[in-house]
Structures are given as structure tokens and as C-alpha cells.
Amino acid sequence: MTTINRKIVTHNGSFHSDDIFACATLSILFDKRGETFELARTRDEEIIKNADYVFDVGGIYDPATNRFDHHQIGGAGKRDSSIEYSSFGLVWKHFGVEITESEEIFRMIDKRLAAPIDAHDNGMDLVEKKYDVSPYIIQDLFISMRPTWRESYVDVDQKFLECVAIAKKILLREIVCAKDFIIAEESVITIYKNTEDKRIIVLDKDYPYGEALSNFPEPCFVVYPKESDNTWGARTVRVDNKSFKSKKYFPTNWAGLRDEEFAKISGVEDAVFCHRALFLAVAKSREGAIKLAQIALVS
Image (cartoon, rainbow, N blue to C red; front, side, top):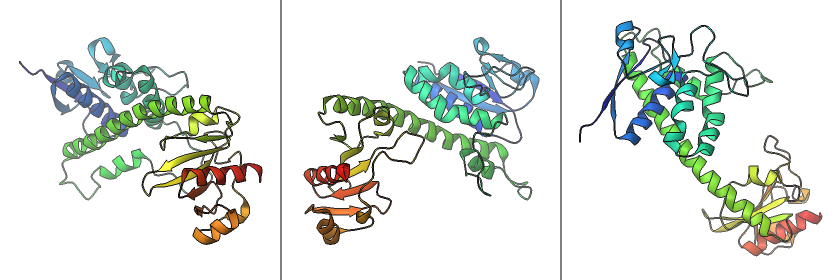
């Protein structure tokens, strides 16, 4: 069987997160299809014209001919959120479902990864600056990979490929996390529906539960197994997924207590620890963790 070797092109010179992730997306796509690719970083119009895929260069957005640029007059469209597409978002828009085999996962990754990168590339600030510092984001990582003004000897194209390898790992992990998140959410909702007293939800696994349970009014605490040390945790449920504020907290006199002192104060024999911020308490058993949550519920 003959392997198809695709010729793909992006611009030369300095690189950014959008072209890095666009290339990573195509690399995953070709892996899935059993194809290989050769990358050219250039602005040579003849090479661009003869390429199989072109992204972030060329001045054309036409998915029918695999052209994914956004620098032309008028750009390449916006999402419903008003975030404009860059090359990563355009490539993900047209191949994300094929890669993930899921419309839901495609949308999750577009919102979590592609849209923020597109926003940054198009000059949109998504973060309100409250302090004299800025968050260190994925764009900063890739900027640090560019040769500095003193590194004229560094191969820029090789650095680009190193960044693509990093982006590919990130994207593949995000796909795995999204798949497992969906399974977890379904499990958490099923447990919620089957729980009589919905103020305390007891899970059989340490599922990510925040988004699922914050949509329901009753849950205040979640009890779950901590497989790392064979204990059981009881955690608060936040008011919503954008806030650190919880619906209920553990008693203030438990803050920071451990072992015998915590067991004595709480009245739970196998109590292990209570976080000083009062959002987490731990016991050696499932029953102990449930009891800690029950006490906190009426305190």
C-alpha cells in the first residue's frame, strides 16, 4: 500500500501558537489517516500554490482546497462568541470532528484551547489584569522557544518543529481528557439522580464533578475515594464553576487540624485532615468521610 505524503506550507520567520497548533492538528489528522507530510515554511507563492495544505499564509480561506489563512481583508469569520478564527481554529473547525470522532469533544477543545489561542493571535484580551502581573500562558512558552537576538545560529524551522511536537502532545492529551470528562460527567449525573439525599453525593471514583454538580441546586458536598493513599475525601461543591465560593464549608474550628486532634474535635474516629480553607476533609473510610460531610451540613 502506497503511503500518501502530503505537502503542507506555512509562513517562514517567527512562529506563533496558532500556526504551531494548526500544524500539530494536521499532523494528528495525517497520523489518523495513515499519511505522512513534508513541511515547508515559506512565502514563495509557487510553493504555496502547489501545496496540498496551506495555513497561516497565502491570503486565502477555502476549506475545499485546504487553504486556511486569516490575514486577508475581512479575515476568515468569527465564532458565535465573536472570537475571530486564526489558522489553528480554522484547521480545527474543519478536521476536529474527524480527529476526535465526536462533535462534543470537538466543541470542548475549540472552547478550551483553539478559541483562546485564536483570540490572542487576533489581539483579543480574554483576561482582566487586576494585578501588576500577567498569567503565563501557552503563547509565552512558544515565544520562549524562538531564537533570541543573540541566537542567530539557531535553526528557526527546527525550533518550530520542536514546538509542534509539544503542541501535538498537548492536543492529544486534551482529547483524552475530554473523552474521560464526558464519561465522568455521565457517571456523576447518574449517581446524582439515584441519590436520595442529594445534598451529599457519594461517588465510586474520583470523577471530576464540578461542572456537573454545580448545575444542580441540592449538592453541597461530594464524598469520593482517594486512590493515591486509600483514604476518602469530602469536598465542598462550588456555587458555580467560575467561582471559588462553595455552597457550604466545613466547621471553622476544623481548619488545618490533623489526625488525633481532628478526630477529637470532629467526633469522627478515623478523621485524618481538614484543609485550612475548609473546602476539603479526609477520613480513612467511606463512612468517616460521609460523617464529616453530614456534620458540616448542619453546622
